[in-house]
Image (cartoon, rainbow, N blue to C red):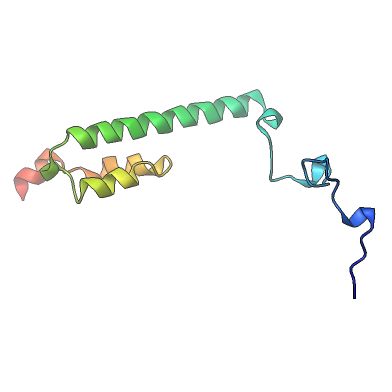
Length: 103
């Protein structure tokens, strides 16, 4: 048995969307499809993410090893995980001065 090979079954080779119409891909949006407000939100969130990661890495490099919970290498790998990594490091990765003196 062979499959029919009519034109309707084959996507157009020149169509970059694989033969799909404009409205058939609701999950795939291009940058140009986004509103200016949404674009600005993405840029701001991206800048916050980069700033947090930079601050976390700087803190990790400058902080003595005894003031870091666990391995510095492990925290260096956690920090680039989206926006969550730096927040996790700042919350749980550092030993607070008052916590060190009481133990």
